[in-house]
Image 1 (tube, helix red, strand yellow):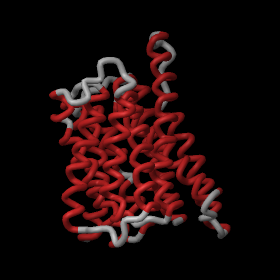
Image 2 (cartoon, rainbow, N blue to C red):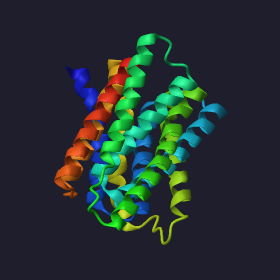
Image 3 (cartoon, one colour):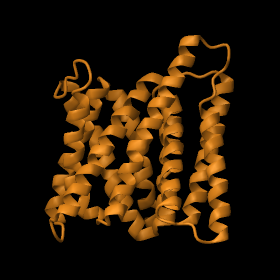
Length: 288
């Protein structure tokens, strides 16, 4: 039971992260910088207890690149929150990330070798695609401006997911230990955040809201570390599946805590899409 509870910590932290971020407020650049600073502070604490076995070029370069791609994905995801809301963005973001990482796993790492893995995996991909489509549903009576926002938000989320997929697969390609990467990865996140934020108008990189959003970064960092602990305790299949429950927390939280509005029909489609994305995530976990 204790291991299961441990496995739910990443889901809770990642689920609360966008809610806390939107409650604190600020520009997308403030929220991005706050996350990166909070993550960097947490990584310093991890470094005190865990030193990499060897500081080599492979570890440093791969970790820095990993962090930079994360910052690219994260700032675009944050932008989507401002455009279409957390409750609509998170299921789409989770679904597209699951699609991306699964396809890389199958095509590059050759993870599926047995017939049952292909059956479960292809079924999962179909469910995820359907779930994303359901979540993106908007009633025709809505204004044209809202439709344009949805298309813009979807495009930004797809771009965002590309960054997150690279963040997830680079450590595997470089064959680096997750614990060893925590600190150099956080440096890459911080550098990347400054870089991408500086392209925005009046970024206020180190404004008051940036420092307030350090709390958001701590939520992310706790999730990032506990998913590694969960994978060690529960195995990757169960640990991965439990972590996907974050989409339930963030989607429901967006509706209840952030009071994001939807029509009755849109709400049904969003909740239906959420269930489909979750089911797909569970099936992918079963292929691991």
